[in-house]
Each structure stands twice: as structure tokens, then as C-alpha cells.
Amino acid sequence: MKGMALLIMLPLWVSQAMAESGCVFTVWDQFQETALLHHGEQSAYLFTGNEIRVDADGAPNAYHPDDVSLQCTQGEGFKGLDCPANGGYPKHSWWRSAIVADPDNPAQAYVQPEGTFKGFLVSRTSLQDEQKVMTDPQRYVDSRSVPYLVFPGDFYKKKGTGTLGDFGYALNLSNGKSSPFIIADIGPARATLGEMSIALASALGGDNPNPRTGAGTPSGTVVYIIFPRSKKTPDWPLSLQTMNDTVNILLNSAGGEVMLKTCAGSLQ
Image (cartoon, rainbow, N blue to C red; front, side):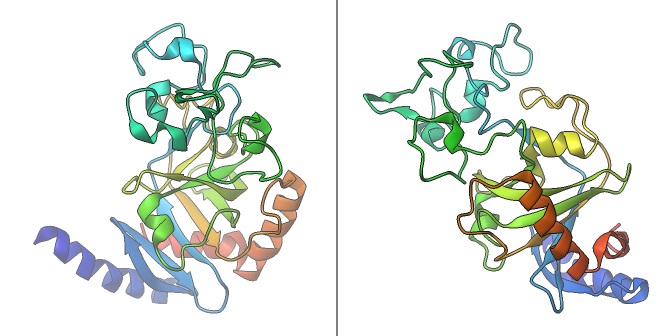
């Protein structure tokens, strides 16, 4: 009954706080215990979060087969940015959603045969460059260099939340650091909102964010604004300059950082 009371009471106090603060967003919905606020005139919604998890997917050096036997958080001698077990490999059936299977032996992950990251597995993201073959690491969105957000599976299925390739903007209210981003990956169904790429975590104040151990992630409250139906055609690849320019226009149309801070304050 306590959980039910939270679902009923949350919109009431949020609505009152927003009315008093001058926030133009209104209560829209809730995902788990996170309130979602929707802009009345623009195709945009926002939410805040204090929990940040870092996703290495899409980086060409995310996973290495030599790391399979190592313990994820306390193990030493890792070659990859993350632990293969965190990508489901090799024990779980879902690993193919995070790691590319070998076309000649689908029971095994594909190992890069040449290049800078020869010997590493190919880590995939849900957003992809359809013009490149599945085994090409450049087909995917590189976590090291591209600021992206991961949607939990159930959140992605929720009507109105947007789709892969849509744009967003994140502002760390604790240190003032911010960054545009793109929706590039889909995670477990009931994951917590706030999982992001290495690049986005770094932009928000992280210090060498570690996807494997969680060390170096930025602290504080982050407000995220998402712009559904904003993706380009094609949605990937996309230059960082295009991302910046597009998000600047979208953010200004929704009231800019001032409005983000105003509305986020009503959620504290």
C-alpha cells in the first residue's frame, strides 16, 4: 500500500510545486519512482535523477575474450573497458544484443581480426549505421566519444518517450556541467533511468568513468530533457556539431537551462 500511495501522491505535490515556481512543464507520468514532466506546447519532457551508471557499449575496446574468467568488480588485469559478463557473455542468451556474434559460429562472439583493437569483441548499440556490416565496430555508437543515453526496455516501449536517434540535453545541477546527447541504446526492461555513455558521464563531471566498477561517475542531481520525434534521417551516423546545433535549437524552444533549473527545483 505504501508504494501505491507514492504513485497517487507524487503528482499532487509536484503539480503544486511547479505552479508556484513558474515551471511551464506539467505532470505527465511516472516511470518506477521517477516523475516525468511534459512541456505544454513543445514535444519535450524532462525528469531528474541521482543515480548514474556508465555503459561502454559501442566502444571497439569494450569487451575482450581474455576477460571472460575475471571477476567483474574486483578482478585485475582487464583488457576491455567492461566485463564480458556485464554484456551477458558467454553465459546468458541475451549477449547477442550487446556483443556481435561470429557469422561463421553464432554460438561464439566475433573477434576483431585486425586493426587497432585486434582481438577485442565487437560491442554493439541499438542505434546503428545500417550501411556498414554487423561485424564492423564503426557501425555502432562509440561510448568513448559520443554522449548518449540508454533507455530501459520498458521505458522505450512507453508511448511518448521517443525512439532511437532522438535528441536530449543533460544538466548536472550540482556542478553546472551539461551536454547534448542522443538516444543510442536500449537496456534491460526494468533498469533505472540514467544509464549513459562514457562520453556523457565525462561531460557531466565524471573523472575517467569506469563502466566495470562504477568508479569516476559524476555525482549530484542531473536533469534530463528529451525531445521525442527529433531524430534526423538517417539517424546515424551523425556529427557532434549537428547534435550540438540541433539540441541548442530544441532546448531554447523549451525555455533553455533556466526552465530546466526551475522545473527541476520542483522535483527536489
